[in-house]
Length: 218
Length: 177
Image (tube, rainbow over all chains, first blue to last red; front, top):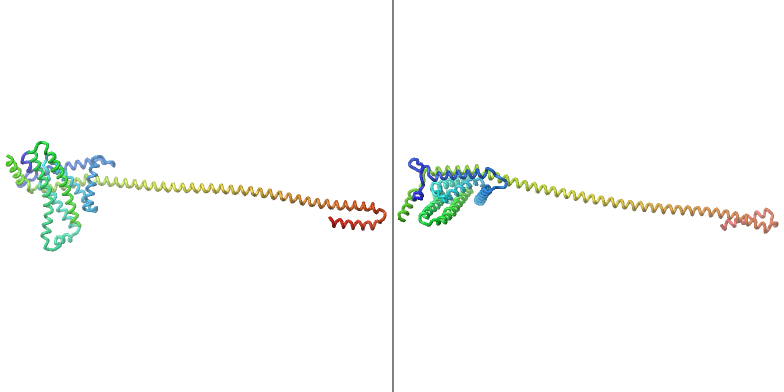
């Protein structure tokens, strides 16, 4: 490991800006992994489920339960995205365990996800409430409009920086642990910073996305 | 040494990590692809499968419940018909008993009647015979008494007065009898 491993490796540039980095490549890998997992799960489904099918059924049931609890059972159509988001983010956060730089420790990834959430919030809010939704920005008093706008913009920024900060922090601390601590010590660090923080951050991100979207629709 | 290391870490972090570049577009695109893949190849088939299974189990349960109800109905019907058959058998038995009793009573009554008839006829016959006997006896008595009287008064009475006497006697006898 080298100090430069903290940085993002750029494989291809466009206009002197990184175009394809290791974040993007790892995301492709995760997409492939998820695709393979999906195929493996649904290839031979049985009425009495096998281990993998049972596991996936449990995850989907869990997502359905979360969506029903936080958004309402009439918004079940958000479940596929929430499932994709949590699976991707979970695997992305856990890649630190196999000494791969987490894609979520890249602001581009987290900001992309937060931007999708931002678009979902406002698109669905407008779709449900039409002009009443825009009027909502001038409430409770018209001059509050700039403040409302700032609070809306703060949403993706807080979402993305929370995840990014957590993952980058764990990356740096793990790097320093590898540098200074005795050989077996990083296990505790991995358990806390990668597994615990990774799962918690995934949960928080998905929960917040669901809450914001359903709030905007109500 | 350590301070140099920290400085390097700080430099690489600040200088090369907190940036936004073209890869954000890639990541949005990638997330979209992941969403489509998951929805098409994992969510829809699995949820469809689970729903089907759920529906199948529900149908099976409903079917079982239906069958159970039908069986219950059949059982009740059978029990009802058995009860009806029992009732009928009892009625038939009762009727037979009643009829046989009637027949016996009728037989007894007829026999009694016959016996009474026979007794009455016999009495009647007896009566007739008695009457006949009395009549014969009367004639005989009349005859004998005439003969006795004849013997007693043989010559003293002529034929005409004799007849008169006999007639009187006869009348007396008839009154007595």
